[in-house]
Figure (cartoon, rainbow, N blue to C red):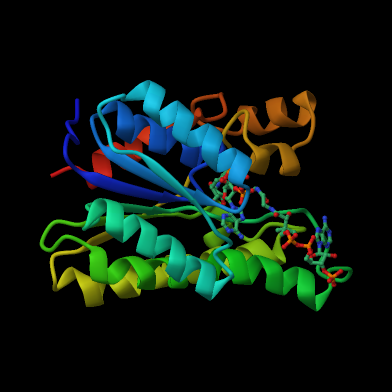
Length: 233
Ligand code: COA
Ligand code: NAP
């Protein structure tokens, strides 16, 4: 349905799960795609998949931790040299583990804030000068924890609520320049690290599915389709 030929798409945290499916779907729709995450083996495997999906695209991978400002700057320099400009930025790097607030250390809380919230801000700031104006599109991958309080998720609830307010605020500031910014809030998505950490067995995953209006958990492709739609003209 969508043609992203000659468009440059960057997916931060795009080497596994939901974000990898988003990256592959943009490549399948013709885009040049750059993916970034910490683990170089995951980065290389993702780039191989992008090349297989769309051999005509100019795909690349860079390795950085979104908490490492210098590595982030270097990674975006590599992307800038290859792409020149960015049409679509997807920011989806995140960390999650279930932990009760009473037992969670300050550093455990901080690590998720640093990855999800500060990391998103740093990624968006790095991409900002490269965004094609007008019509660039940013998509933040948020989570229901942004507005639904959940036990064992104080750190993630706080972080993702911040991510959503960042999205709303930048929509006002950067929207004036023709940069759109939206947030996708996936529900429980089957076959993902995030869902497996929160519902670590089939019985729990089935129980969650029964509370979803469609009576099934989401598919990674559902979220990828939403991303392609949101970034389209
Ligand atoms: N329960 C309680 N605290 C935990 C924890 C858990 N399951 N896992 C990590 N922590 C705490 C650690 O104890 C540490 O705090 P401390 O220094 O006070 O002991 C702090 O979190 C950082 O842990 P560390 O292992 O050094 O972090 P990291 O930077 O290597 O990894 C995480 C970051 C913890 C978020 C890790 O789970 C990760 O890399 N996640 C990415 C993948 C993911 O979460 N996918 C789902 C996306 S929704
Ligand atoms: P995932 O497979 O673990 O994806 C996380 C991605 O981010 C990986 O590519 C990971 O690669 C990268 N990453 C993690 N920490 C990073 C860091 N510090 N710096 C750079 N990259 C980092 O998880 P997922 O379940 O698909 O989740 C993807 C997104 O969807 C997240 O934003 C999550 O909050 C959101 N979400 C998921 C669900 C769900 O049901 N799964 C529901 C709602 C929202 P490396 O390990 O190589 O760094």
